[in-house]
Amino acid sequence: MIPYGRQWISEEDIQGVVDVLRSSRITQGPSTEKFERQLAKKVDAEYAVVVNSATSALHLACKALGVGKGDYVWTSPNSFVASANCALYCDARVDFVDIDISTYNICAKALQRKLEIANENGTLPKIVIPVHFSGHSCDMEVIYELSKKYNFKIIEDASHAIGGLYQGRKIGACEFSDICIFSFHPVKIITTGEGGALLTNDKKIGEVVKQLRGHGITRDKNKMQCKSPDPWYYEQLDLGYNFRLTDIQAALGISQLNRLDEFVTRRNLLAKRYEIALRSLPIITPCVTANVYSSWHLYVIRLQLIKIKRSRREVYEYLHDAGVQAQIHYIPIYRQPYFKRYGFSEKDFPANEKYYESVITLPLYPALQEKEQDQIIENVKDALL
Ligand SMILES: *Cc1c(COP(=O)(O)O)cnc(C)c1O
Image 1 (cartoon, rainbow, N blue to C red):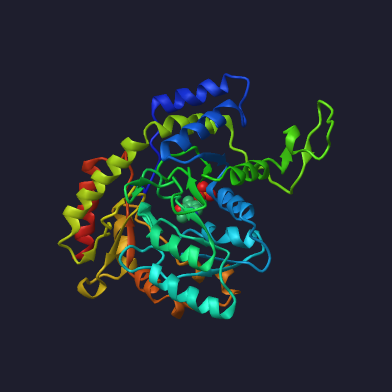
Image 2: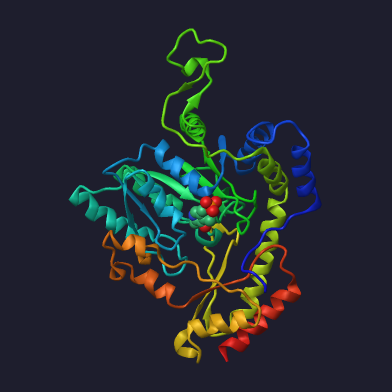
């Protein structure tokens, strides 16, 4: 089976991990700090805090921005459930903004309309979480302008998008956001097995997040309430979590980060090959906006169902039978049984519904060989006959 995505581990990656295993510190320690410094530098952010998953990173981002009971958090329904769950962990209410039918990202126009209505009803969001779907940046400048007008904060869910650019600037630089999140799950652009990161240019947010990552405990004398602490003393100042990344994982992260540009270049090359081979078929290939350099986490195509004999499900099954593990990204979050209790209606998301009925993700990862890709392309052609 050719998976839709997978990691690429080198001998250097393995050596980095082995070195930490032979050292005295295997959980959060010097390698974690080094990974954070290199990550911040790589994406032009002031501060990086690494945690055990992007899910934890989103949770801490909401906490650090003060999300609580009664607050609204808005995100894109075309995402992994974690983009919405972070609000629920904080007892906030979640809502979705329909997508743009060409980029499959949150639609800035739909966002504006929804904000106008919310403004009249007194239900404006505290936070909006744009998701850079497939590695293609959202229209951040427009969303940022809306955030100034309607007074909300922005968390970029860039789980797909490390290594990408928006207006020539790195995703993670937080030019138009308060916090940016990365995921290091094995299908994502770089991996630590499990892991995630928060990027910010706000020192205070960085400090709050670090404290929440470790139980809300501080060992910094300047932050303690006790003015003459004993040498063994520490203080819990907040209700935090254990969201630490291990140094074993951080070592893998450092090594993978060195290969980020190589990975993203390769993903771009393979995406280009798909585009050239598939554009004359009855499918819609992904578009890339002029001011965006995508990291190409996912290659999604939309079937023009009226022009082909097979249904989407039959195409999916045809590909799986041929050894191609195509996927669907994503089942809209509002369709999940757990979210039914909030009373969402499919009618409120016509663009996402239209997208969801015909989309399929083809395999794309840097270790995918051209030969394998050519085989996938042949399988897709056959499936559409
Ligand atoms: C993968 C993913 C997450 C969650 O990442 P984990 O590191 O697995 O917790 C969140 N949001 C999006 C958009 C993702 O693709």
